[in-house]
Image (cartoon, rainbow, N blue to C red; front, side):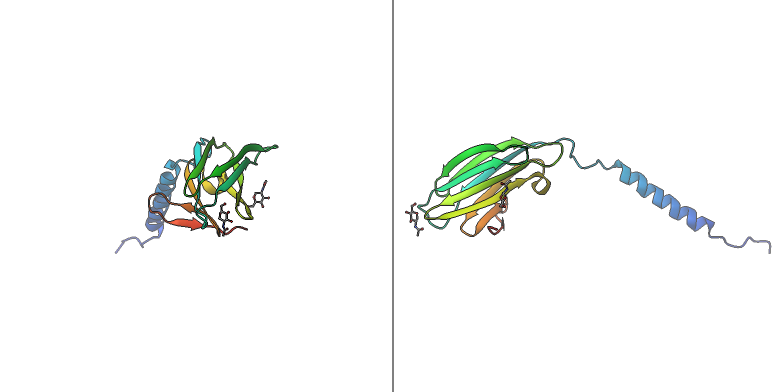
Length: 148
Ligand SMILES: *[C@@H]1O[C@H](CO)[C@@H](O)[C@H](O)[C@H]1NC(C)=O
Ligand SMILES: *[C@@H]1O[C@H](CO)[C@@H](O)[C@H](O)[C@H]1NC(C)=O
């Protein structure tokens, strides 16, 4: 007698407060760090099947209005060539390399795209006959691409 009918107000308030809690947690996360770029180190190792073949690597920075030419470098079997650079606030830094080895192999590859590869860190590429592979230096696993 005289007891109030149950209302939906209590469950709605509970749901709203849970949603608001989640919203507050979300706001504590930092945005991705596109505003503080870093340094990238690229290593390119010669693992072509002919183990007496020198790999000639020629890389260029291609994201500016002009090319920055890093020149041609001869890489002995199982040795590597490396270069490093600073990335940019807007993630557009890009490097292209050509790869030549005897007798007549020639390939091009976009070795670095900031939007694909991140703002910083070490990327070790191992060049095989079929294409370049990004090697995880901790596990030894390779993520391979075909020459396009
Ligand atoms: C392997 O490399 C050597 C040294 O550059 C070259 O003379 C030879 O033609 C290559 N052999 C093959 C099978 O590609
Ligand atoms: C970079 O290399 C790719 C091959 O992966 C080629 O298709 C492209 O034209 C090159 N880009 C530039 C700007 O040199």
